[in-house]
Image 1: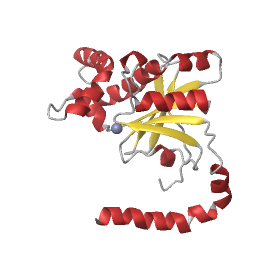
Image 2: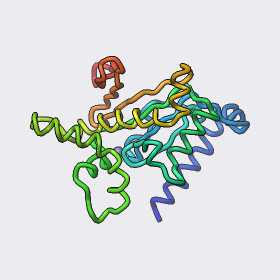
Image 3: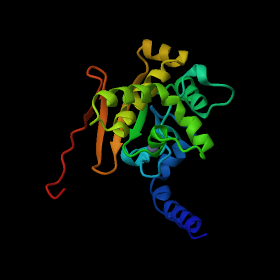
Image 4: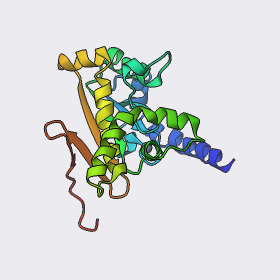
Amino acid sequence: MPEFQALIEGFRRFRTGPYREQRLRYDELAQGQAPRVMVIACSDSRVDPTRVFDTAPGQMFVVRNIANLVPPMEAIQGQSSVAAALEYAVEVLRVDYVVVFGHARCGGIAAALAPLPENRFIGAWVEQIAPARAKVLAAAAIAPDIDCQAALEQAGIRLSLENLRSYPFVAQAEAEGRLKLAGALFDIADGDLRILDARTDRFERVAVTLPASD
Ligand SMILES: [Zn+2]
């Protein structure tokens, strides 16, 4: 198992490097966590939010799933990893922000546009963005040059933000001003991050000053 062996080697680097170098931080974290931000991200191996946002251990409470989706509360029956993580983040940790972090070239979004019947669980999971997909496809019927994949990646984030507010503890925390919701979209191809502007409802690129060689 060379891949698993690579993980063990990675652990050894971590244990002798960052873990030792940040001893004080880990001692502190051993007492408990107090992240101020929750991130709902895709499981995609290319878009690790702790990398993209360059955060330290203990800084970010993360739940990841296919296509960074938040089901509406009424759709939850029994166990839900997203709902449980959300409740813990908002009610127990009392985070200041919940960020829905989507990404370009998302395989989950592609599956929502072109379901693969043989993939029973993926299809059922991404079907929850059917309302967003219907809007995108209706827009594409009028303007065929619309990139449905990119449009649905954005629409999926908007829908997840809307669904977040279907949980009373989220809506209440937001109404009291102690919780903010945000949407962000990252593209691995060009390294751009776009943030959903609540006023314009558009994803605006985050300006970055890069060295001239980039
Ligand atoms: Zn994805």
